Length: 390
Image (tube, rainbow, N blue to C red):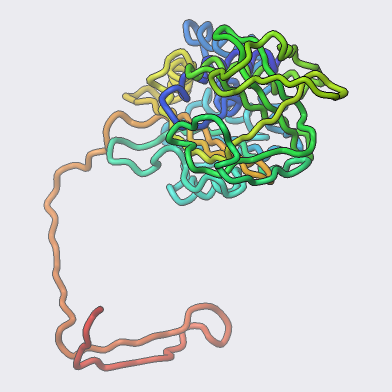
């Protein structure tokens, strides 16, 4: 039930990946929406129920369980931070429901938020998706989820030169070395799709994470859905339906070549797959995509705050790397309420003193701390000339 709901959401989420080389975590986004769900009312509640694919209490319980007991191949995290000046009893009750597993506390500094992202993503994401210190307004409520993995393949790939490929390569792949798997992969073959046959390949990490690839259509949604279906079926111990090679035409397809020879062999089908090593990183704005549910989630969290003029932000940062030895990926999703404009100080008269130490002057250094070293003047100077400041 949970897997089906997340898979359905992932099909919507794939729209973020359609504009070019990119990466993201549908599960990371789904988890954040599920944590917010119980706070939603009215139209927002109906919208989130539809987006999450489950009733909100079930989705919330599932999200808490996933974050409390993560998969052995995943590092996970969640957090809620708020400005006490804007809290209400409803917000405090909301926080109580999230903690644990969520971290909680006052609004972090930018350095603290960046540190949280690094820690929760095994160092793969250096910077938190949202700016904490922003002239456009003050963050008063901030929620986040994080997912990360660093896994090794059960058997590594061999790295072969680009000339090992026989088919034309597009500019982003031309001249790059390739990966060949001599050991039997978890699965390889052809699958059906609305755009026709797709070639697919899947490999497993030592701990059981399945990573599937699919190719054969320039429309991202089609191979994304095929790869997702393949990975989910294999991870669930099911054998995906395969198109027999005898049903494919001989010659070149979109990304493959089918040939036949008469020879003595025990099998009537053979496959050879060459894959690229790749890495990607992306930052996605989520509010402009209402079908992903974040405008509704934003409206829900605004009701937890004292009345005021707020704006909602939601962003998703992700990175991934696929190599001969393994796969690593991470994502941080953030949803925040910010005051609609920066706080404006009242007009007042300001007096300024300019002091220039360009005459002889004294300098003293003393120790700080406790015990016998407390407050001891260690160095003293009378300064009557300067040197270059570089």
